[in-house]
Image 1 (cartoon, rainbow over the protein chains, first blue to last red):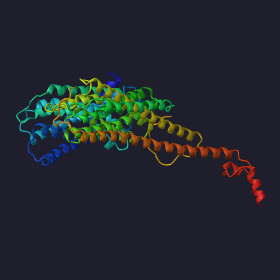
Image 2: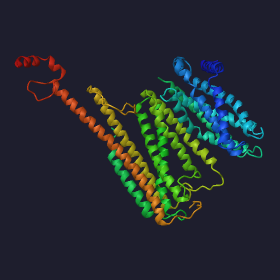
Image 3: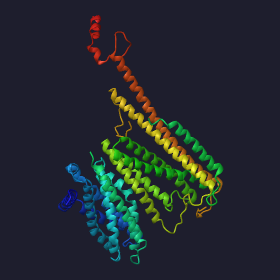
Image 4: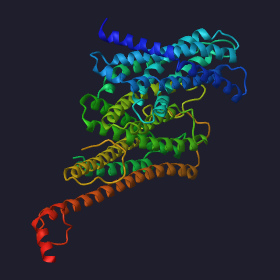
Length: 226
Length: 240
Length: 92
């Protein structure tokens, strides 16, 4: 195993273990999402959702819950000198990017494993859309993981870090959200899942993921220079 | 020396703008469908194209900055993005005026290019709070460059996604230029595009000159050991 | 022309004229605002340059100060120079 690969595994394992032990972000994100669903129930005055409304509520909520997780991603590195450690180690610094993105991806998947069934129970009539929805969710999670890691690694060094991360990240994920909701809307339609332009949207999601994963990998070296 | 070509450049800009305005109002024929309203496009579309090119230029300068480490590329990147954001304001306002004149609403979601531009504008508008929240000047420059590159990659993706999302029910309201424009309109459009491009270049050069002068002042101040002026603790990109 | 027909017919010339004029006015105003901001920057640079020139002149004059030379403020070195002692002696 190359040093970079080893570093990747170590950092990823450390992050996941830390989260499991302290449970800092995940329960908060899940609770946040669930309460937001309740707010939507009353705000929209509806007890069941379908089509574009369902898609909008689900993705909006997931996105804002994800922002909570993104903010906390590099805090430990910042406070405990993790950045310096990576800088000094003779490894590919992009390993840190890969590890952190993988960790964020993992958090998002776990979050959705909890939150999406809750959404289905609250608002949907059947569980049929959930299987194809999983594909959309996974691809979108990759995109949020890539961009979230990139932006968070910079925001953590700034003054208003909790504000700056979401501020910059939100416009950046608009294309991702357009594609995700575009794919989800027909899936959540009244009469059962439809696959209108499903392939197109999945292609857009994949393109987004590819571009930003590569970009993050390429520029991360410059971020860690000092 | 940034001020060097500024005079001939600004003269060229004035000539081009005068030509563009003359062509727009005295030469270009009246559009059959939209009437006089269509004249707004000789302003709105060139501004948009120049702004988008400016954002791309900002990204290119950012890449050069990251690779070479020379701070002047960062200053170029900053000024390019800065100017394009200002041009972006003009794009959105003129676009809104056109929407009001055509549809009766100050904003329409049906025009994918305008909507994409809004999202791009919102993205680049975060450049300032992002940049100025990072205190260390060298780090600020580096992160700003990463932002500029990321945002540059985002622009085409965004246009694509918005265009795909456009509902098939609403027809495209403005078929962008190239397709089937009569020669006289095309000429007017191209001259307007040239004029806006020159304007962008002139203002960018002007801003860089001002920055350079400020930078030289700082240098002079340091050299003769004069006390620092009060106020303005914000770390801004420098040209020296 | 490949313009798709709009929902509403084209506005009459005088109404349309207002919108077109408005658009061009907005553009002009933005450019002028920018010029004004640049003017302010230029003023600041001019002011600082003036201040620095004055400072540099003062220092240059102060360092080569001789008895009876103008009304410059004495620099720190003056108080240690023999001139100070002479002045003190002549005051007595």
